[in-house]
Image (cartoon, rainbow, N blue to C red):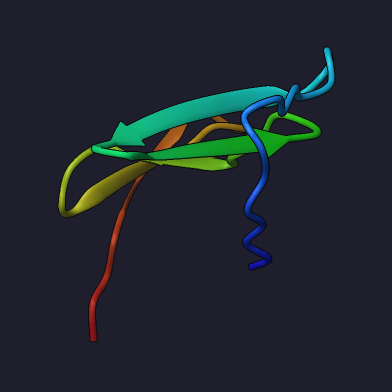
Length: 62
């Protein structure tokens, strides 16, 4: 990960997704060029759903 210290005049592009987190005197800005495409979504500690097929599946641990 590349960390850059910038002046206060940072502006993300109009197509990017940005999040801002403020922690005391530190401001963190994260910007992404596109929205991530997740293919699975965790339901609970033992189950997840596969978004492309909408099927529920169980997580098997060895």
